[in-house]
Image (cartoon, rainbow, N blue to C red):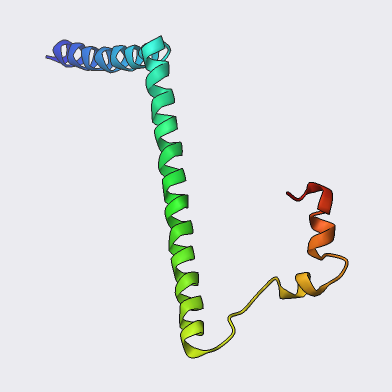
Length: 101
């Protein structure tokens, strides 16, 4: 009975080792590498989609703030007003006339 038990344990360990080795070997084949790249690219695309969605939500929120301020007759917070008023940073220095169309 003991021998049969250890034979079963040995077979189970052997099956696990062979399956793990087969998966590892398959991951180094051209098809396995292509699948890995496809999964990585899919994750990258999903991250990019998530980023774009976050930007769109932020843009919509800011647009709502601007529309609300306009409806109330208030000036919205212009973060770049100081920069435009500074003669050292004005549009002429940032965009010289020879580079404008």
